[in-house]
Length: 447
Image (cartoon, rainbow, N blue to C red; front, side, top):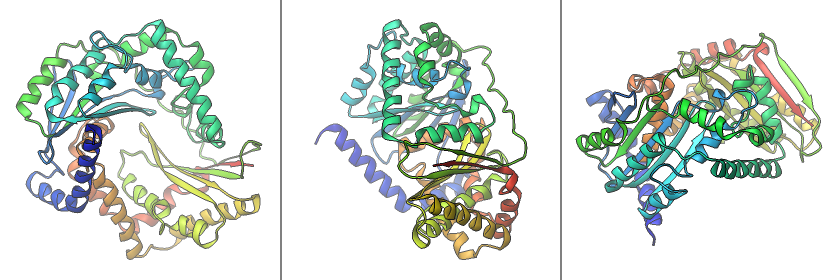
């Protein structure tokens, strides 16, 4: 068995162990430090935020570098820059050759990946704990001196354009997702696809890429999160060695404030001959994730959509059998939240019945109190998913980095899960009536 397979097996064992004992460990930590796990937070003189979380259960360490930049920081005509930079970060830097980052991590028996969203770009890797310094060197080198030239920019552009073609060829509903985002989000900055538009990618220049990189990929616009088998003192010394000399950035452009639409329903119908079956996207504008209203909204998401006993799954898939596909969740883009539901049906008659069924279930939650049993079942599922966010060292490092980027602090972690679990039946009915209104609905029908 190779090193990568061994590492995967170790991570699986850790995940299962924490699944079985995670709530006990969480309760113990709450009693001792009022936090789900030990955390050390400090900031370097160049503004880099650092989070450390020790866990000696396995000889592994996970390193996450998260940048406060995503597609919503792009200008019209320059879409895809953030995703392009994510891919370009593996094409070499001053002391690392093209794709060498991959080979170094894999040869050490580790794993790595990256992700870009509307508001953040994240790089993460898990390696044997004795490889921490090497990972810090790799991340600091590309933060300070990424190689940006005509050749590697064009290579990445070609890869992304091919990816756009592949996505369109394999997902006939993809364009409907993009179109729906243009309806449910208020303006260009929030609504355009993360991967970008093909015409924009073709026209992006090396200078565009250099400007975007030099503006946003700076230590004071990033979070370094490390979780696993570490010695805190030694880890801090290594972090300062590799990162503290990187110059801080200046004058970060703020994300554009959304132009909120009028309080009225948005209903559109599109005929698309490429889709195999009719369907629809249904959405509601939600409260900001930074408000207390968001706690019951998240539990409502679970009541409606999560698991085979959720209300919409039982109604559309199991009982009425009007839909062949149902998916949905609350999506967050910076300080905006939207509940998005996607349904595919066999014919237009079934589609109309599915729409009516969803509205019917929403109205039921608005008009009558949910049972304590159903509410507790949804809370239990949510609690399991919440705890699994930090089941492994890699999950934990990413969870901490994303939490910090969202709130600019980790203070909320001490009581966050408790607030979700404290949601009452009265909270549910009140929030349903407040946000699930006809005026806040967005509907895009695909025929």
